[in-house]
Length: 55
Image (tube, rainbow, N blue to C red):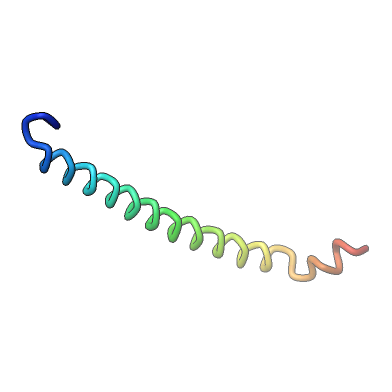
């Protein structure tokens, strides 16, 4: 396909790279929100975790 229509092949590569960056960014946002939820849950689970670790 690259030999028959190089413009189409070039645009296909650009689109695929763009989509991969888009989905990678969305996944990182989703993962950050899940980590934030886990952090909040861990604070509720052990309210005084700093004093529990030092003792």
